[in-house]
Picture 1: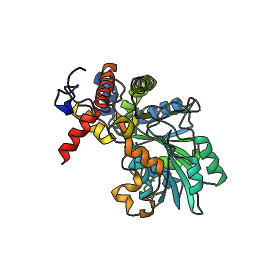
Picture 2 (picture 1 turned 90 degrees about the vertical axis):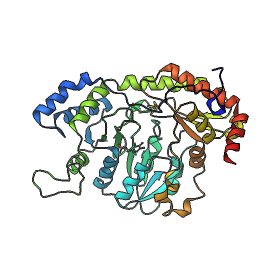
Picture 3 (picture 1 turned 90 degrees about the horizontal axis):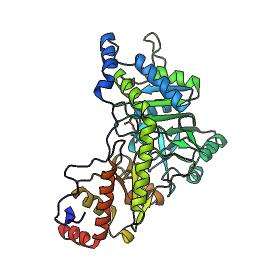
Picture 4 (picture 1 turned 180 degrees about the vertical axis):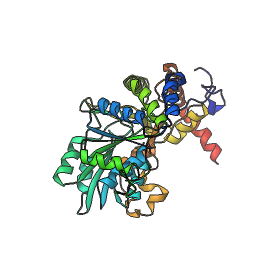
Length: 397
Ligand SMILES: *Cc1c(COP(=O)(O)O)cnc(C)c1O
């Protein structure tokens, strides 16, 4: 890129917008006969394809019981309800808002916990400090595909007799200590929305090795009804469509390929960006595998020359889409912050990450050439940071 940066009046490096994410999808032809089959049978929800998809997911993850649901948020709501939680739940504030709103729908109090500054996942030491008399559960979250530190969390849950749930929305294919997640805690919940690793359009999956819990949730995803209309449990209407399961079955065949490719892209980003000053990366342990649902970098304004928002603006002008995941952290969001004014000054690690993070484009069929162009743009932006800062500053006055 020899030409001028777009923010300084040049032509954008991309003619068309480079999206931050795109779902990996099969060709329409590949799912035509299965779709025709469902239309012929008239069974378009919670039928044989959902059963097959559940079996294949259980095999892939190596878990005893799985329940497909309409999305991960209802999955979280169902698990919390089925476990009969009552009291305070320890949860990271560096997460997507759905983690916490599932608790609100169950009238559970969220007690926020800071994250580890390197892994971005909930800090087990902070968890232990936050345990109080009415703590009933820990809800840990897989962040961008990086698993939380499960072993110490598991030990705390056992020692203090707490339930342990994992929001594994980003973690379909994530490994912790070389083992696929899906088997940990009381239950885990995966998401299949289009921004996640494996998509079914909309959808989610609950996994558990507790057979009784699984049976209960299976009824609860269908209002809580067994055979008649004499309702057994307070359930939800949370079934998965046959269309979703058909899509999921095709995508499952390629999920390992997609994850390996995302890992390659993430490695390329790291190699290409690591020589720039003021860029930090999320650390993934050697015995873990991230799905790289997102690829995040942290910007140190003093060293890089621009802050995160200025970099995002300069990239936007180049037609490169970025996102600030997760900003603001949950405890500072409009609907939650008035409940918790006392938290304002806390969570040092979360605030540092949330204020400086920017996620770059990454998806299953991203062109390596496009990644190269994103890195070149960041290089040029850093090189001209003084000029850009002046330009942005003068626009504001
Ligand atoms: C996407 C997401 C959810 C919600 O998933 P849905 O399937 O859209 O309900 C929950 N938690 C996290 C961390 C997520 O990223």
